[in-house]
Image 1 (cartoon, rainbow, N blue to C red):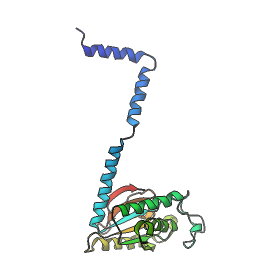
Image 2 (image 1 turned 90 degrees about the vertical axis):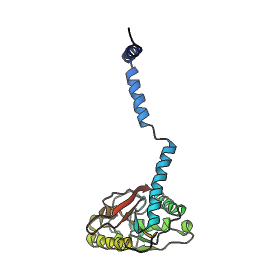
Image 3 (image 1 turned 120 degrees about the vertical axis):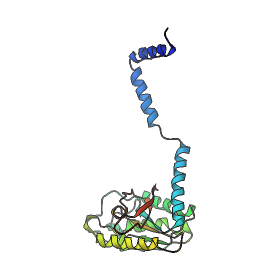
Image 4 (image 1 turned 90 degrees about the horizontal axis):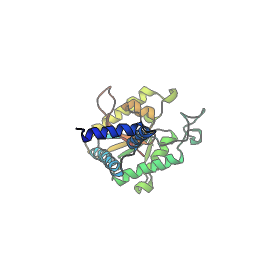
Length: 227
């Protein structure tokens, strides 16, 4: 006696012989796989990531490393760039300025205020910090401190080893503070973040990291949040 399963299998084999039926099935499967996740699932993932960042920063003893926000197109800086002339540098695009403001709003919305904001002397980093920690976002303009340790050493600029040593020592002191809930924000470049942590950040991405031990990269406590 022929079972229902056998009948179904035979019917499916006949359908597969029809022109285009098998290909149509394949396309439907590919389309189903490519469908985006539903809104609630994405929202839940975002909530979990935000929660990790917030709880980590509330404990303190860490550093928020931020790669400057989106810039105008290009790599590095034009020949003859000067630190005292933003027009000679590759600076933020309009989207980068908006991205910086969203970054600052995230801190405000979660009730997080850094104990200190330090930045590379490059305009794209300083402007990221100034847009993020502006009076509009915090009621008062947080002081942004230019710091040579966070400067770019891309294309042979600066002194890579000396800068990294200075930044590492600062992170060590932050990790050893007695007061909980204090953290610093450092706005810098991809090369600096990568050298300190081994992580390659996108523009406008921030990660939370802490000093680990001598000769080792910073320990990454939270990553993947970009604006």
